[in-house]
View 1 (spheres, rainbow, N blue to C red):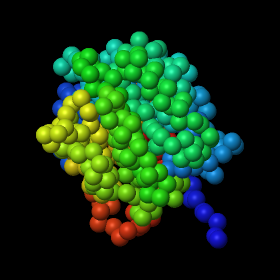
View 2: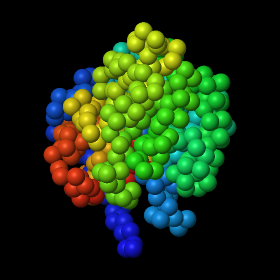
View 3: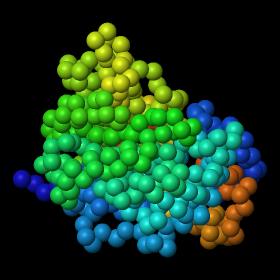
View 4: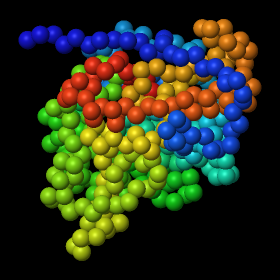
Length: 397
């Protein structure tokens, strides 16, 4: 039996230097990329650390006890994150999701939540402010997050069977504690959108064939009628360390058929433009969606690319802007924020808000990323060889 070889590229030390365009780009809320896609969603990674070692994200053989995480001084401060986020909002962002690593490991994260909650969209509305977590610290943090202005949370949970879940998180963490965190989030009211309308908490389950696909029906049964939306995510070829293989992907269509065979489903309309999840509602005896039973979602980034209306940018914990989850390089804004010159000597002073907004505008206008669409034209298992992409644990899902 041959040893598994995992290629490593530290993308944290690589990046494109953000530069000012010849003319400043005004923040009008109407920014579009090279394929005409608007900027509406910003994912912000607040830490590259996590207390789980899920094989599809931070495998233990790579992220060992000796792994060198980013030093604290390299991370953007909460004030720096908020300043950058404010310029993204001025360009049209309406939703901000905090992620990681595990975002609740960042000390005093509720302080950042309060700062972001004070921002307003270009039409004067509160942001849709959300957070994705593994749930391990949610019981301790739920109330403080809600009081700070967080609208809702999404919890990653890959199975209800305790043995399966402990094996997948690879740190022997019990599933009961995650379920307790979900209950705490419900009790705190973390299931509302920016307008105070109930949207329900979300649970994300990454489905890996042969590992946890036997948990699909138990998860669907458990969350049906609970007020929590369960979303099934196809196992993706993110980064270079998770050993991705196409034969371990269970297509979302198969997941839907599997659930529908026991609990009839009715397809629902997208909740918003650029929505990543295809929605299916549990049907009542008449075959129509019964809202009391809730719904599921399926995210099919491997078998059904949704690049065409992707409106998301990602900000890494130390200030790089990534234009795709499968990107290999980010655009470094930290020099703009702190005034340290870039590799080419550009902008050795702290950027003004107009300059920072222009740099962001130029980055988005140059975007043509559509990896998932291009992957479909590659032979099976060839996608992983197409380039060394940034790790999910570094820029979030």
